[in-house]
Length: 529
Picture (cartoon, rainbow, N blue to C red):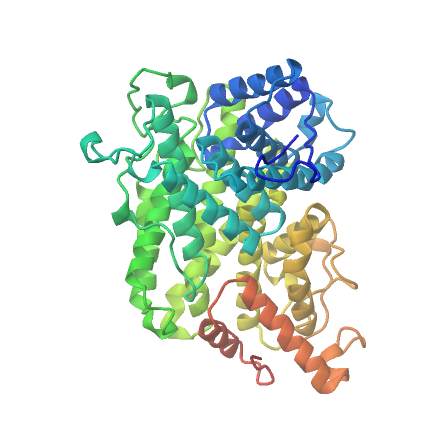
């Protein structure tokens, strides 16, 4: 039950319903086992202990820790959203879809609790962790929206109030009002702060050449990077020695994510005035960023490479395989993104087109490889925004490449990866509403170019060998498919809107998008305001 003491006692009181203690433990285990590595901002033993304290307080009629409840609700939102077929053995839900349907409710409850806390100017590490986890829930269910940015900015502000940005500043320089942290709290604080840093820099880098603004300035913080250790290594009151970087831990993915974010930040610093003039970003900078991504892989530990056989415990193998997959997907997806504006600019930028298409094909093949290995993660991966958006990006790159190669007669199965990618996007529609928002404009554009070979919408054959393709850009097969031709100016305007929706989903600047479309050579296509 939530009640703000500063409010009138006669005002309505909000209640939050929690699952039973054992059910909560199952949801927490799901989060710690399968999800937490992506945003390693918690400490497993501490989360379990605090959860037990909440339920013990409720059982004894005492007031539980509200910030812990916020964190638990955020965990529940993420666990239910990523519920898979293997999790049905936990016997919590009647079906996987039933679990998925509850994710939004847990998310809303968590945000309500945080709003309640912030009315009293509450500040705590657990509330900051809750906001980070709810950011992750929001971005998976809705995308990088205003809601996501709002929660994220609140998390950064609270982290600063906690002094997480200056954890490793010498004590004599700290203000008397700066909170003091225990050894365990300080290490978790480093995890939290650096996750916020890396997310801030990555999201800014994904915003295209306009709007790439960071909230966190590295010159205004004094925080060592988190140690390469497992949660079991962390004990209160005991200094922990970091393991070598070539040894896998629960922090392995997080530390590589930080490295990658620093690549983005460096690039952003070099293009700080790009918002005033997109042309200020030179092709040399794009080539340098590509070279930095290559160097990133050269310095990545061997166990995070696809050809590495980790051996060891089966569950640990599966977790490391997922980390390898997500890291590879993200890096190759970003390689597609940085070269995409130069994909259709002619022979002078042939190296960009080659790099862009190469990484796009890699992303689709990576997806097919994951499905063949029958990893449990594969069944729910499309509910992750990072996965869906990078598959979508790879598909669009291959679509443009096909249009450039065959402007008069483009066939879907001329590129096996393109056909496979379309099938994956089709599957995503059944799992996530966000997928429909991404795919609908693309579907209409593909109909215009006669690349979409399926009669109505997204129905995809089981094998790419069965794909039918007959018509060309200039041919006409049905009134619906030739909507732009039969409806004149109105149809053309709708088509332009679909193109612009496609450009917006790729986070490209107006000039980059215009250059890309110009390279496709459609004389009837214009960009609307």
